[in-house]
Image 1: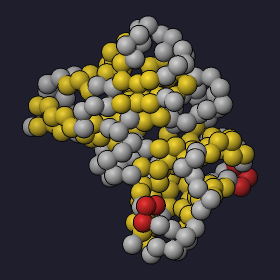
Image 2 (image 1 turned 120 degrees about the horizontal axis):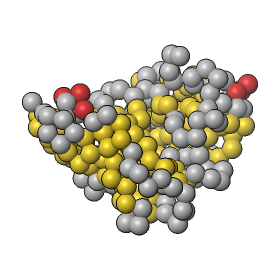
Image 3 (image 1 turned 90 degrees about the vertical axis):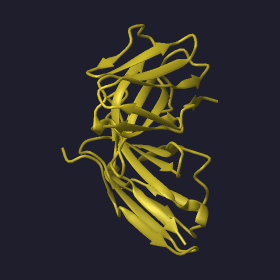
Image 4 (image 1 turned 90 degrees about the horizontal axis):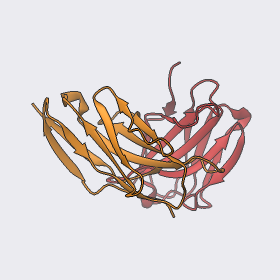
Length: 116
Length: 114
């Protein structure tokens, strides 16, 4: 069974600093997608960044970047120049690329606090 | 594009009552998903529709749960004979077949069973 593990229930970062959120996953599939979703308090979840497993290059979206280590099954999110608006719950998620399954498998989340 | 909407946003019900939630996906999105999120946990998949066909159901979806998507547009999720363990946030998401990866989430319906 595919699983996603986020071992940091809470993290804190100073405004303008950099923080890294960890995620590991387990799968026997060779082709899949990995995602980081952001869920602000009382607001809907939005996609922050995605990574296709067949791509060796790490994905980057503005201040957000990932460190994808396929062999280690590790997928961490780095937030640079942290802003107050980055405070939210962050979920790592996995989805196989092929087959009939379209469901996302989520980790338990990391609550990020940004200190002014 | 108004995004995914869900109604109601909050529902308080007594144990044993039936409840129904509605999800309106983004226009022309042919795929629709339901997830359940309990406190301190990530969302867990419940079921998935492509157009009006329900193609996948989780083992979490007991006989008391039923989901429909008539005409491939909005979807409803009904819970019969609610139990306190059903208290959770119910999330809906939608996507296009041509979008290989992104699911757009609604704000959720928070259910409290007393």
